[in-house]
Amino acid sequence: MLGAFVTAFYIGYVVANVVGGILTDTIGGRKTLILALLPLGVATFCFGYTHNLRTGFALQLVMGLSAGADYSAGVKIIASWFGKDRGRALGFYSTATSLAVVIANSTVPSMSNWFGWQNAFRVLGVATFCWAIVTFFLLRDSPTTPSSRITRRELGALLKNRNLVLLALAGCGALWGTVGFGAWGNALMTKQYGISPVTAGSISALFGVGAVIAKPLLGWVSDLLNGATKLVSIVCLICFAAMLVVFGECSTVTQFYIVAPFLGAVAFGYTPVLIAQVTRASGAKSAGAAAGFTNAIWQSGSALAPIFVGQVYAASHSFSYALLTLAAGPICGASILLFVARRPAYDQQRTPEVPAQSTISQHPVNSH
Image (cartoon, rainbow, N blue to C red; front, side, top):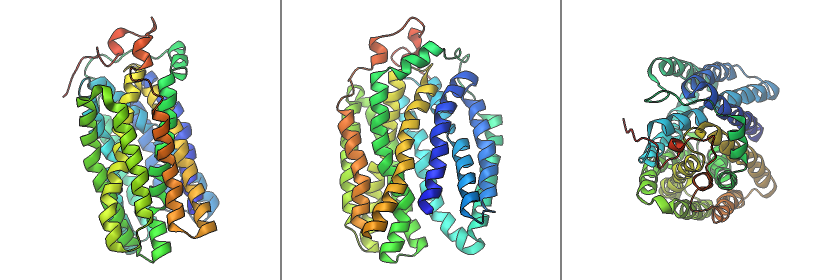
């Protein structure tokens, strides 16, 4: 049932990424982000009143449909504001998910114990709704005049872009491991070793701390090693799979505390490097649609992993087998990245409809 809730959210999330990516390149990232945050806040608040599986499944689906547009909107805005230092910008931007892991695991278990899980969801819902209001007043799409809307021809070109397709499949394998661990890590430690939910949450918070450090660091490395971003991604995914295996062999709280930050560093560190490759392959004008398309495929791994891991653990009652199941994803992702062309197909075959200034090499740099 827990796996069903997580899967319901990511089903909606996958669908919303495709629609949200196109919407972002049509009406702009700021409007798309606001339209995503408002219903997400309402649905999260209402989940606090859930009393059965059907209602919970439906609300999680709505939450996923709302939340799915935020990623492509953010990537579109970053691509519009930053040029040469885009890797670092994406590194800082992508720490949002890792900081959320740290904050949520540090506060929500205790909040649930004190006030009930229902009130925890209501607080999160109100906070999300309020952030939509902040976004309305403070966020801007770009430092210059927004670019024109994406055309159908440009959308079709994205779907035929070999590098984008490969990056989408590689990210699917990577997110299989990342989100699968995020969904099951606490529950598996609690179920297998009798660790309290609060202690398991603090272990996962360290998992997030490692990610917060690694994301901007690897984003900065990708800026320094412009031609080696593929290598950085492959090495990170291989290390991710290895650390999942190591975590699966742990059995004490001390061991989990030691391994968690290193696992978090490689479990999330690859994301800014992959995102930078996506924006480089698509160009700034189509960055929203490209981010939505690739992330939709990435999150299909997120949607499937919780169910598969739940089935493996239910059949084997083995913590190690569950972690090995997760490790298969990043190994597949690293293997697929081997076939990504070093120079993006977008730069090699620029169509007349796509202006030259939309490529990363000619995009105006603005680091403010």
